[in-house]
Image (cartoon, rainbow, N blue to C red; front, top):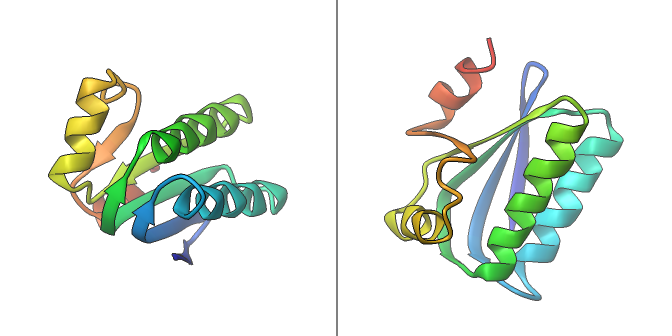
Length: 111
């Protein structure tokens, strides 16, 4: 499940549950596309309630990062569980994403 809220011109997507093939990965892709269709190019993804992510979920994150960057926007991540950080380290993607401890910090970083 993905909950969406606005913080000014920034959209915060709070993910919950599994971001895995055939489940959360499609929800993530669709949510990002909906935001882009609205013209949103400043997005924070909050992982507070994510219980699991697999390579498909990581692929969707990379895809979202690329699409948003190509449109002149920014994608930032916050509240990453240790297992997500470990996956990003192993895949050498940790340095690609801007990662913050909490949503407030991530939203303020757009200023």
